[in-house]
Length: 475
Image (cartoon, rainbow, N blue to C red; front, side):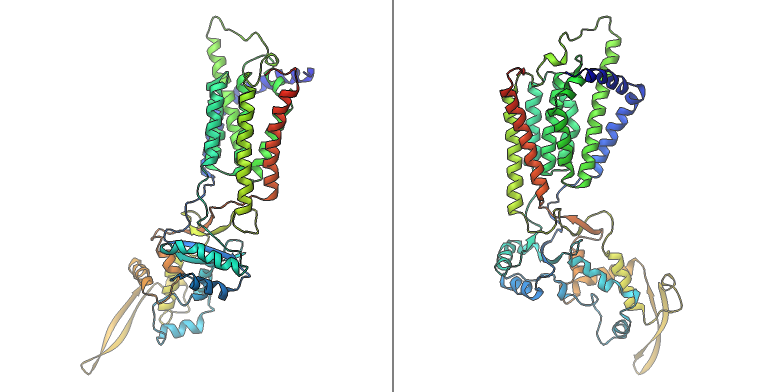
């Protein structure tokens, strides 16, 4: 062991046990857990309650896709090219005539903004909404499109990857059984496993495997003399931490940052446990200490022939899933998930029902509004209307108001539209609809992600082979 490592061992231990670190640690634990929960990325079971989404490259021939939809015997599909004025008004009415004359006005921007629902966030794919009752025909549609050379996909291809949290749970149980400080290991493994449950990506699973192995090593030399120096001197441990961090960042920048929060929270748990143990020992009249220093004990708890094959097998299974998914996954140009319109319940990134109500109000009230006034001053009208009654012309007072009653009538009249409008799709989600973008279920791993996952496997194989070759290593 390098002498300078022993020096930094003492410095590092004295720093982390400062009072402000002890006080801050519980807050760091809470902050990391909140961050992981708040910014988690969970694959949704589906984007829309009553519709499935089929997407094709934007340069694809729209007429060919529509023909394929018809050949697949799919009816009532909602298409971009099949959108018209989404209001039930007579084409011979004054309202329609004035709208048609002024449709380039900013008051009618919704007419074009609603078309954003037919494209993904990056504007690389055109979308088609298929009723859920005909979801079984989507595979036929994708087959017909593939024959024509159109690489299409759907949002119904995958669900939550339970295999990843399951593998981590098996590893935790095994390490808990073999660890020399099982409770310490279990406490330190909580946040990394929680992070994987909240962000179930393949590279994150590989990163979590490496981190769990590092925590197992820490638990086996816990509170022994020269533990920090011994762990840092074992080059494979810093290498595993570095590779695990890089692997987490190959998913997305957000998942990489959340992995850093997981590392910070785990470190805070270890500091908190150390502080609690030191406090308890300070109250005792006699404190037993470990005779053998860290370098004299096995970081594998003498179970290397069980631990390393188990971890290597787990990493190989994850890599196999990554490799297969990269081949059979949806054909996208981006290395990240497709962001498609959905009911996100979050930030409003697309036209909402309120925008539709305002558009309907503008169309219906435009013939009667004062063009010299702002929009907010044109939300109530009362004007005379004349009607013939038994040969007499009678005056009636007609009242128009932009209120809940008006919105309700517009909402209910969506069903009476004589075409498959995007508003029908939106209405199927309910009045609390919040239009935004959500990731598709399928996750596409880029080449760098595959390489990083393979590196994780090689590191575990290297450690295992090293323990066999190096006769002097304690097993």
